[in-house]
Amino acid sequence: MSEVEIRTVRKIIWRLIPFLIACYFVAFIDRTNVSFAKLQMNSALGLSETAYGLGAGLFFVGYFFLEVPSNLALHRFGARLWIARIMISWGVVSGLFAFVGPIAQTLRLSNEFTFYALRFLLGVCEAGFFPGIIFYLTLWFPSAYRARVTSFFMLAIPISQVIGAPISGALLGVAGAGLDGWQWLFLLEAAPSILMAFGVLFYLTDRPALASWLQEDERTWLRGRLDRETHLKTANHGYLSLLKSISDPRILAGSIVYFAQNATGYGVSFFLPTIIKNFGVSNFQTGLLATLPPICAAIGMVSLCYNSDRTLRRREHVALALLLATIGVGGAGLVSSPVLILCLLCVGQFGSSAVAPLYWPIPNTFLSGASAAAGIAAINALGNLAGFGGPYVMGYFKDLTGGFTVGLLILAACALIGAVVAMTLSVDSRVEASGAQPAPAG
Image (tube, rainbow, N blue to C red; front, side):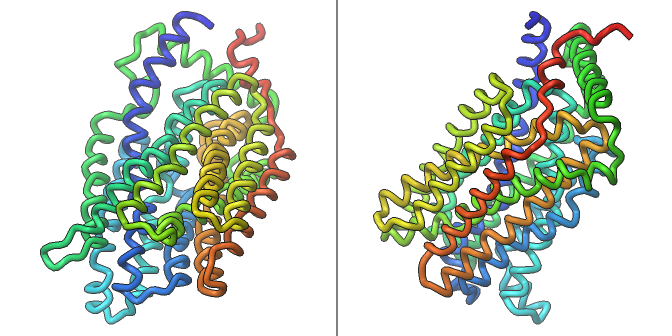
């Protein structure tokens, strides 16, 4: 490893990753703070567990329809403008949740339907953010670094849960100006997204060629390394058109793996405060205990992804992470002790949260350019449909049986199926292993 490589990668990491973590931090809070608002909102709006689960999941339906077009727009207009647009629009819609009741009265709709509509609209507004960042990282980092870099970026998820859970729990106790705690929660947690959008406009750089903060030798090394990897992808796999990249069997298999991870992850996270609240603790204590699974998730992300980059055994690491999710989530559905339930959910989060950063380097070994933007978005869109199914299954069986056992076992079965499919993934490590070597003459 050359001195210029070490210097360049370190500089890019410190320039981009902390800022992108902050952006995803506020995004994930706006996406999932409904799980804490639910502790007061359901009774205030008259929502059942099934209605809440359906509404929580409708976010991902809106997300699904706009995912690929949004990522292609990012490729066309640049990350800076498009990510800022996404953050402003989702911040505005997230704040509107504080006024579900007045909006429903004004439009003569039911509270339930208005909640559904806003969750769907929130998904439409946020569509393209996560896959856009994943595609953006491929413009800056060689393949051999992408699992650990993606895990650094996705640390925003457990960080948002560790920091956001106690804050959300505390905000439920805020009241004033005719608004209850759950309404203040939505308003106060929506504002940072809009403010961060202006930071995106002035801070992000669309591509390495425009990076005045890199030295000339650093830009030359990065351009050469990424061009060499693109050459290897084309030589090994040919060029994939947009249509072929979306319908490629490798994309569909990856979507199944990602579906399994999202079903497990979102199915648990949207109901985690409720599960912990049933232990007989206060709202603030619920927020504190809800930080333990995300802390385990952060450890799982970094440790498994570092080892994946070291060994380049991508497929095996993805399968292992999904097996841990199966054991943790399934086990939590079979025990009754609050301590055991929380410990097993920590195991489940350790595995489940690591799946995405472990998986994303795999399609990047055969996709590039616009086909990468479309392929990554297609995997994310199809996989995130589980974000609809997971919470709905949990809510439906909670209403039907009065407990979470059946829902957790179904989510564990999804993770197990994902682990099996992960072992069939076509992984080309030649791009990562050879990308650092000089291209052959001719």
